[in-house]
Image (tube, rainbow, N blue to C red; front, side):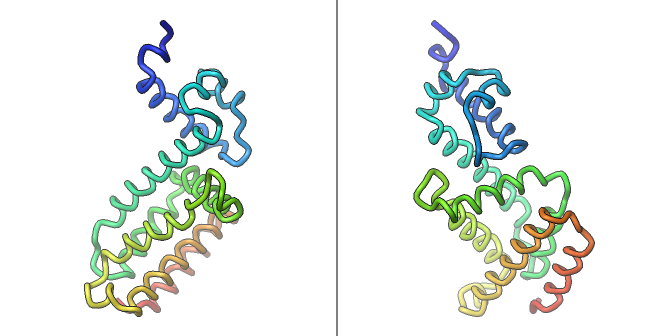
Length: 190
């Protein structure tokens, strides 16, 4: 009996982690099973056996990436009083160069979700917007959180973060982009 048949869930978990690490470096949009399998010490046949097909593997990697995003949001978004302080904390995490690979994968997946809404990527962009808005809501007092103005402020804060992140990923100009985020934060009521 081969290793995959003996303990498919352990091997599947191991290969999923390896595929996720591969995706962080290489992205997912042009994923090909042969190079992926070779890079992670497997074979296309084993990947298809464990994940059903290439789309099943991509779904699993996207789910794994989203789990990381939610864990990060939970950690970074621990309730801090006020929207500006929370945005500042989130921006510090987003602007940290050690997170570039994860954020590039996020940006690729977000954009692909928009252009292929019925495909394997479908729903990723909308889900991530809701996740981030939920974290931003935790820092607002209940009266503000439950008001249309509170929702508008969260949406503006998220738009600033998302736009700044895309700009930072494109240009690497940390100083300019951080200055713009701080300028916008000064305009948000505490």
